[in-house]
Each structure stands twice: as C-alpha cells, then as structure tokens.
Length: 494
Image 1 (cartoon, helix red, strand yellow):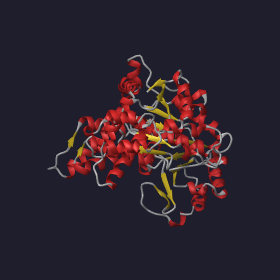
Image 2 (cartoon, rainbow, N blue to C red):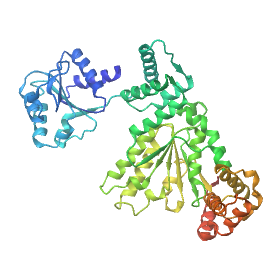
Image 3 (cartoon, rainbow, N blue to C red):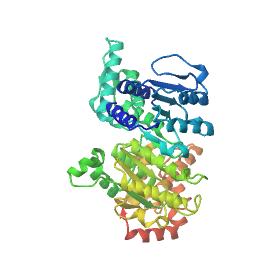
Image 4 (cartoon, helix red, strand yellow):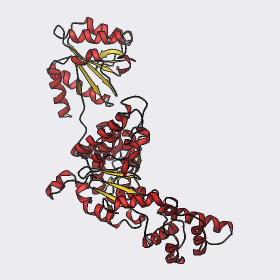
C-alpha cells in the first residue's frame, strides 16, 4: 500500500495530465487517491455513469453529469485544480467527442491542473492521447503481506465470535500464502475469508481449493486447463530415468532461484517427452506435476489460434502469464509441434508463436517447469529443442515385458480386480508391442466380454482380447522404427 501511494504521488507530482490504471480493485483506488488528495491538498472527484461527477468523500450524486460528454465539458470549464477519477470510462473512449474533450483538458493543464485518472479492468489508449498519458499499476501483495492478511482475517473471524477457536496448520498457512502470490489484495482477502469461514481453520484442503479458485480468476478461457490432482509416480510403470531426474531437481525447483544459486546450480527449466502415441507421455507429464506436488496447467495450442492477426500471440502471452502467476506449477504443452508448425493461421503466426514462447523460456524468473510432449520431433525447430532451452529430451518407448506386467497390475487393481489372481508373465509375453493405452483398453474390453458371459475376468479372457487386437507396433511399425532410430543417439530413455 505504501509503495503504491509513493509511486502514484510521484506520477501526479510529475504533472502527468492523464493517468490510466487497469485494475479491478476500485475501492482500493478510491482509498489511495483520497489519501493522495490530502497529501497534495487537492480535491478528489469521482465520476460514474450511474452517479455522475461528485467529490470522492461525499455521497451526493449529480445526475445531470452522468453523460460522459457533460462530465468532461464540466471539468474543462472549471478552473479548479483537482484529481478526477473516471471509473469504467473504457466504453466511451471510441467516441471522437470524448477523446477530443480529454485532449483539450490535458492541453489546459498549465492553466488549471486537472489530473484525469481513468480506472477500468481494461483500457486502450486512443492514439491521439498516447503522448499525454501514462500508465500505472497497483502492486500485488508479497508473501509477508499475504501472511498479514491471513492473520487479520483470522482475528476478525475470532472477534466475530470470541468463544470460537481458530485452527491453523503452519505448513498450510505458508503454502496458502505462497499459492496466493500473483493475485490482487482484494481477491487474496476474499479467498482467505472463504477458507477460514468454511470451518474456522486453514488446512491442506483449503490450499487446494484456494489454488483452484485462483486459477479460475486468472485463466483465459479455453487456452489453459487446470488440474490440481495429478497422478503420482506410483501410477506410472517404468520411466525410472525420468523419475530420478525429477527427484534430483525437486527441492531446487520448489525453493526457487536463490536455492539453486546457493547450491551452484541453475533452476530446472523443463523437459521434452518424445514417443509413440499412447505410449504414456501424457501420464508422465501429469506424474511430473504429482511428484513435484504442484498444480498442472495444460496448454492447448489448438485453442491459441485466432483468425485476427496478433490475437494468437496475445492468447499465448495470457496463457504464459497465467502460468507465471500460478507458479510453482508445471506447464504441459501437449503435442507442441501442432502449435509451431506451418499450416496454422496466417503464414507468419507459427513463427510469432515460437518467438513469443522462446522469449518467455529465456526470460522467465518464476518456478514454472515446462513439459513439452511431441509425437514427431522432426516438426520442431532446432532453437526450441537445443540444450539450454530445455534440460533434457526423454524418449518414451513401447514398454518392455516387466513394465507391461506392471501396467496390467495397475489397471486391474484400478477396476477392482485382484492382480494376484492373474498370470502376469503370460500377459506380458502376449502383449509385446502394445502401448500402455493399448493394454488399458484390453483390460476394459476383457471386463466387458466377461460380463457378457456372466463370468469373472481372468487371464484367459485377457489373452483372448490380446489375440484379437493388433498392437501399435504392428499397425504403425514403419513409423515407430524410424522414431526409435532417430531417438537412439539423440535422447535419453525415459
């Protein structure tokens, strides 16, 4: 609050005639400028389309000044200096009369110091006003401020009913403060209130609920999908090298850049998962987030593209900003080659998408671990897959016999069947060439077949379904052979 007050005061003392502030924290803006008016000995006025123009501290509407043009003409005619807050003025900035009046008021600043402050959730500066305007942003609360907000709301909850006791898990409080980084103070206070009022406590379950609510506040529709409950590594058979890789980097990733510097290492950036379709890349991406214990954001490159030039890049920037604010998190770019190869949108869009992504990868300072999955790395530009952009490229191959046996155990147990009642050696041998997804569908089909015959699923039913299904290694034999040959000398087996 104090830093915002100081920064805004400097901007006003610099005699900026037009100030634009994009924010949803209108009450906070009113409070800040009321205090600034006292400091600068300037009256503060506010305008809304419902109440017209009036002193900020007085609740006396002026209906005759609700029309934007009338209000601006009134401000232009007055010789009284002051600060004029125009709230939600953005719909009126495309009208030539309004733009001209704003310009004339700004040009008359030397005669009458009337400072116009436009406040809205989104503001586009008309070209005629850019040389007269400056933009300001409210700071977001840091960890200490968030901890203070948690204390304030806990005390308020107890004060409302003194005989109630407040319970807090210290670890959950610290995690809650960390997960609220990136939201406004008003939203943070609202989410904290919701967590406390639910049961008079702050626990791990509150952290998960608040994290999901935070995502819903920030996410651009349809571009990134949020998943908090991610698969643990216990749900993934094999992938021993990938598991070891993530384990070694977990603490540095969660503790941030300073922790890495203390240990003489750079913070982990991310990985590429290359492999055959259905081989388990998606499950591995979810498992990385589960192992790190952070939310998973899935970036849908197909949803990025827009017919209007420039909109696709803006969609990507919004998605990456969401990931930065949700940090620490895993950002999963599924089938990344579809987003940056030719044939999407206008001819230059894939190049601009790639440039935006590479810039973010090089400059980000947040704990966002990138997991890119691809079925065809030949469609990816070398500047994306070179060392330094990502930490490693892992190849997710078809599972071997031991892993196939474990996959059967996982899917049988998941469907309420006792895995010990099956011959996993025979099943593993008969499923050579199957992917994990293929094995799962065999289990599903076998259960349907057994139910149709009113019998309990057993090894023989599964073997019959395996015999009736062509594995991916046969259906796509040539493509898989080429992919394996390419990956043998260029990637690390997952």
